[in-house]
Length: 346
Image 1 (cartoon, helix red, strand yellow):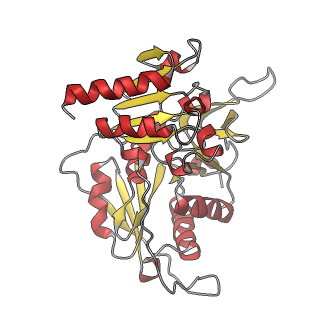
Image 2: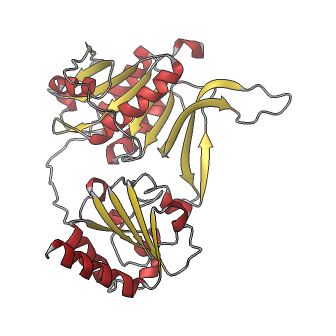
């Protein structure tokens, strides 16, 4: 089968308990960009039980078509039936590109499906674009065009790798939530639905779910925060994060941190911003005691307004900051908190 038979950009539209995950809309937004470069369409693949009513939401955020795989065996996520469903869609419809969110579900489903359809997968991508491969071809080397170039952190986030899958289709990637941007809603959009069911025959690989226990986390979701007060190694200690807590409280914001803080055990990993943490886009991002390594900047550089506080005037964080304060954070942060309290009447 020739690679030219594979057409279209497909997105796995993850849902849990019949609620679509935000990463589905983000992937549709990126899918529209990729599809425009390839002069093709974007298709959402919606898998579950009783999920057809969710299709219009996908159309609102850019899906030209929605393939619905609906079956009672798909009520809860289980690797085997979901992998069978998605692999069957790929084998039937032959997408050129298949995008999956790098969620707990996507990180299980993506590799399983890629192995089943005999293609590669680039995991945890932060950048996707259409381009030439190799980027710089040798004089006697063929350069392939219109390839999906997938960029992801490598070696523990210490370097960036751009990967292509030139000789297999589909080109598959899992994409980190929060990295891509959804489009403005298309009001009144209705889904072009195509129903497909490959048939499900439970066997020994179908895990039986005996009980579902939903844990309640006390940790804030930093990806949804409008104001983030983020601390780095320069904060000095776990106890010193109290200064950041007080500033965040005045602003109605949330505390986040850098990788070094998590490694020191000062804050939980759920609060980590960066390539090996979460990608955030708050309205205001305070970078306090953060040097500004590329791994951290990649996770917050799209914030609307960045305010940096650091005693090192040459710290790289000032290169991306809209406002910078050079000095001792132990003096600046309490003074800033006090001034805001006074200004806001708190």
